[in-house]
Length: 125
Image (tube, rainbow, N blue to C red):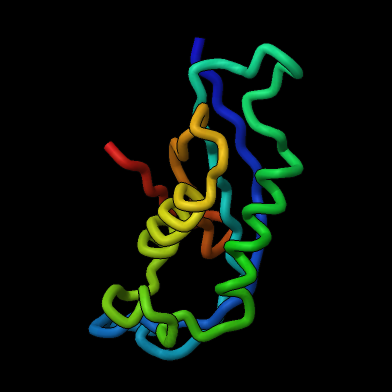
């Protein structure tokens, strides 16, 4: 039976969208919220957890710290890809996937909110 577990973290960062015609072409900031969802075929027999929430929260903290209080456009990944909510979700997906120690789980999806009502999701098909 498959299971999913999720946790969220927030960070603050500035960005601008190159080539966009509108206000987002100007430098501005967001208090971003990120939810990472992990998927597993089932929880470990003992202690019965799909993935330890504390470990996941610590992992997200490490990853979010890379972006926190930066200008996203100045970071290597976002020099070749506009730092949209979609691209941030993709970046988180691969950063978290590359740091997972447990091969029993994988990243199912990453949701990134740039505001309380605007969210983008990245998942690998």
